[in-house]
Length: 115
Length: 116
Image (cartoon, rainbow over all chains, first blue to last red; front, top):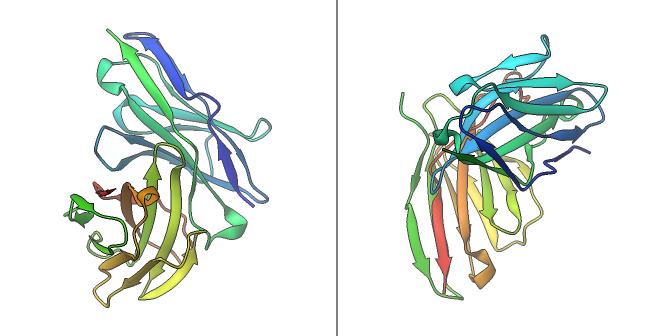
């Protein structure tokens, strides 16, 4: 079975400060990991993914994520937050051993960046 | 390249009615997935279609159904609507490599259904 957890409902950060949105996962095989962002009344937009290779993945809008196999985590990071980064962020996972299964999403973390 | 298109964007129905939502995937994408998003339950997987065949199905009652056409466009139908069906219904398309889902999903803007 595959599952993903986002332990924080909301993260508050001041503009210009670094931000981290946490994600942990559980799979039987190797994970395929994704981050998406959702702005109000919009669909989800793809930010970045980890399939294999370098543990630090760079994505859109200056975001990056670090894959940590020992801690089963895939935290989303950005060195300097912008007010426009305020949105709902979803982590998602698919188990490599269950390639035909649908993507499983976390419950989402609301990021609030204060000016 | 045009993105995923969902229609209608907003609709209001009353309990007991039925609704059909439409999704046109990105050109060349043959896999279409549907998700229900609610504040309490988050993103819940409904079903996935590939080449007109249902590949995966989530844990939803039989009132929720879908289909895919030969041009990869997909529809989902909800019959006998309940208040709890009020949600944002998201469609996503993707490429499949060798039948395996290794790539990201591309989402539409969603269809917001309100059931009164």
